[in-house]
Length: 482
Image 1 (cartoon, rainbow, N blue to C red):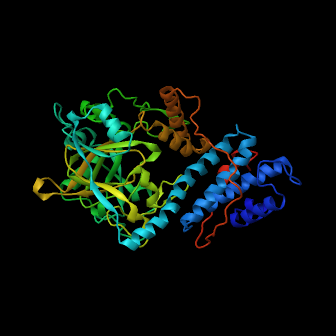
Image 2 (cartoon, rainbow, N blue to C red):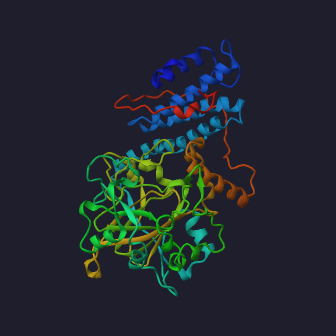
């Protein structure tokens, strides 16, 4: 216990494992000389030790999967005895989600070696274009939303005028905005070299602010120094006048979501003085200089996403949601991608990218791209001089949850709420959980947590090179756990 309390998880893991083996206490059955409480405490602490060791950098894929599967098993022992203990349910569910993707990556490595020997590389295919008048809600669900396939929608302006960037600047120009900058260059890889930046989508915030009108004027004159840009600026939150204008709601998602069970939050939904995540966030505005981009990422909380280009061009690459494990995600919740580019594949660092099959499209003004939930993607902003417009790119976008991704969103929000320590996420989770129960008439939002005995923890090599220990502070929320 002293080693675990001191965050020395390699030592605590070795000692706890030796103790369970010596006392024949690796399963659910009571065993001497440990008391029942001591037995369950050891399993919980061993589970947390393995879970935190899996978060160390440079752990091989197979070893990380072994650690997470071992953690899941050891959390399951006290959970079987106390199934109503929410902390135990949370960590068991978290480890199960992480272990699934970690094992998928580990299983892909032999296939990647074979692909390398054969000289195979990733494949790139075009995203299908569909006129919005030719696709029904049923077709959209069957062909794209449910199977998680991206699609470009054209003709969205037929019968109604699309918004213009000038309209938005006219209404919101006085609002102050915080700019962001990406380390990703036009080639699609981090200009700093090495792995993808730790910041989400590779974006870093500027220390100061400017007004939307000043940013627009600067871009009109030829661009912002060093690639500073407006990234995902929530109109309902920062400029409700623009969000309430009819044009902001006259095209997708309504054209494909009519008759669906769209799950939304009131724009002003709050918890403990904090705005609930996803509330008041959409549509959001992107205003960027050409020749900029973002790092590969997955949109948060299991949400679908659409984007309408207003001006300029955007080159998108989207990987299938079912291949997210190939982008070397890192726990917890495996949403930090360690691959630096979907445009310039680094097969030497990540041989599994040879197995990847990505979609690509060059998105122009008036076109809408639908990106399914869980799909890794990367975007580069382009400029076509023959279009006669300044070298800027503008777009509107939104994330959304409906009946096709509500279960995935509920899981991601539950894990993201971190047992209530993130109240802004917890309040959105509760809203989505209730909506899911109403949609599917189920009694519980929790997945089928199979608690079968998986045997003893597998042997695996640990990496101590440059390891940084994760804090176990979240475990202190229960007297039992810590």
